[in-house]
Structures are given as structure tokens and as C-alpha cells.
Image 1: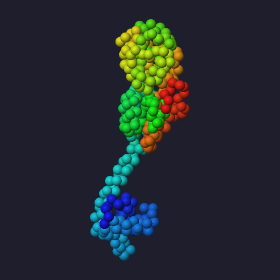
Image 2: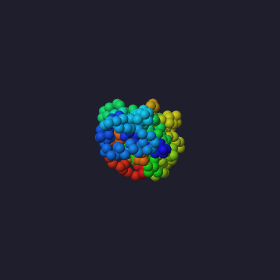
Image 3: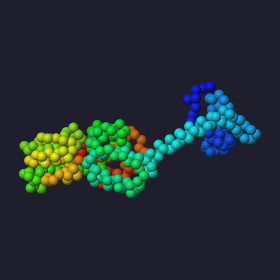
Image 4: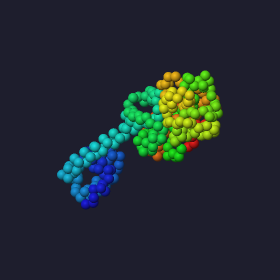
Length: 313
């Protein structure tokens, strides 16, 4: 007898169906195979096991003692396998699937809740969603480690296996304390910050790299750097003479005594935020449905980000 590892699932399913119908023609029809194919499959299985599984009793096909014992085990194993397959398959369907999403804090206040509402209106509330809030680079690392199905983040350079779909833009502004000399202005140019200590993003992030390139073109450099608008606005509040150059996000609204001023020489669509997924990974029905909803929901998703300030792929 050969090792049982050489048995195939099709042989086991064929055996199970014949054992339940005890009729060769009917079993072959329900299995969508020919009767000779089923007969050869059963003979090969008996050869592999080294024992008879069926015998003919007149026109009936009946299980031998070995066949009855084997059926009890096979029915249990295949039943568990079918249930496992159904459960895993359900995870990828819109009706009962799940999504693991990572997101930067920037879109929690407006864009993401509105997108989710659109998705729920289209597909209902059956999809289980898990969310993790982080900065862009940790999110990208986790996406590549298959810890998320999708992320919303800045676009990082040197990631050929990731697809970045543009979702929305954020403008870069000057944030000052109401006691700052700039507080009476409606707009300020970056050139006016030459010689003025200001706070902005650390250059080791995708957003920080965009800002660094912009500042270098204007001959300026921040004196203090942080990764997010909350910390940058804290610096503006703590040091009332120091302005901050940052994205216009809801974090700024949490502080009293500050004013947002337009940057005259910076386009409104300065920074793009993307929906990203790993192109190497098969995307389930629920993932594809969410991506398509996001594309339709976003006013810019159908085109590529214009302008030299977008981070290149």
C-alpha cells in the first residue's frame, strides 16, 4: 500500500458521494464526471488503501466494513474542510467579509467618515472593519507585512509593489499665534520667512520630504521639526513669536489663540493623501468593492496627481 499522502481530495469527494448515493450513475452525475472516470477513481483509491471499499449486491453498490469505517472518518474531515473553506471565503465577500484599514490621523475628522458612510449606503453594515491610526511610514511597513488590507497615507518613494490611488489634497498654510507680527496678514509668502525661525515637518517622512524640497527652493529651513500638526501648533502656542508651516487639518482647531494664514506662493493642492494596497496580494471582493467606492467618492481618484510637488512613484 502506498503512503496515504498520495491520495487526492477529488478521490475522497468521489468516494464520499458514491458512499452516500450507493449508485454509480447518480454519483457520477452529481459529481459532474463520467461514470468510467468515477469507477477508475474508486479503483485507484482502493489500490492506494489496499482494501475493498465497495461491493456489488445485485444492482446495488454497498460499502464494505472497511468502506463504512473509512466513510465515517472521510465525512467528518471533508465536512470540517468544507466549513473552513466557506468561512474563509465569507471573509472576502461584501455580505459578511472583513477589512483591516490603517489610516493617518489627518482624514479621521472629515474624509474617512464620509467615505465610510458612502460605503455603508451601498453595501450595508455587515462588513466588519478594523482601524489603526498611525503615521505614513509605519502604515506602509505594516501594509507590506500584510497586516492591513488597505491604508490611507502619504505616498512613499521606492515602493514599486504598492499601488497608490490619490484620494484628496491638503493645503499648506502658515499658523501663527494671535500675538505674532504675521497675525494681521491674510497671506504670507515663503520668501518672507527668510531669517525667521519657524516650525515645520521632520524631513524623514514623505510629507516632510515634500516640505523640505519646497523650503530648499525658497532658501529657508525650519528651526524646529515635528511629525504632526498637533505638536507643531503646540510650538506656535508655546513660542508666540514662532510661526508654523503645516497642513490645514482639524488638529489646529483644537488650539485657542492661533490663526491660519494662506501661503501666497504655494498651490492649494500641495499634499496628496492616497489609498494604498499591495499589488502582489490577491484582493477579495470586499477589498475591491471598497477601493471602487473610494475611487468614485474621491473627486481626484480618476486622474494622476498633477504638478511637480507630488512625490514621484
